[in-house]
Image (tube, rainbow, N blue to C red; front, side, top):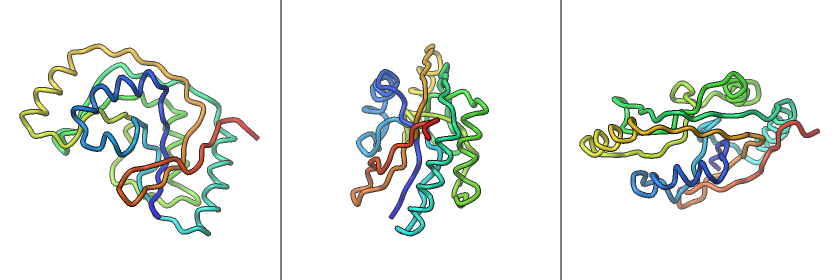
Length: 170
């Protein structure tokens, strides 16, 4: 089965992202707005139990932290994906790194850029128009992060929460 690990921001940030995703993200209905900590990976039941134990250890050793979003950026020219740029604070970078070392195999296809996707798979003209408009807007979003989720992928391609891991809990 396919799994992934993500942080879901608070409802106000999800609402702001979804206002754009509804129109510009064909994956809108597959998963809520999120910060991907670990890209899609496969695990069988035996391996999954081992990984869940490791995720509990990681969560227990992590203190809640604040994320900030002040701008929109893009992965162009590689892909016409537009996203809210999450400031790459050390605790977030460390958290992501822990999920790609040790018991976890590094499955990342790209370097970690903390972000929340708001548009993807756009045609070039639409991308230029949307990105040009959003780049001029000001965003000042802040959120307290105190958990992450292990997700699994359903047969229709959508994702759902398998288990939630709260920070600092023993």
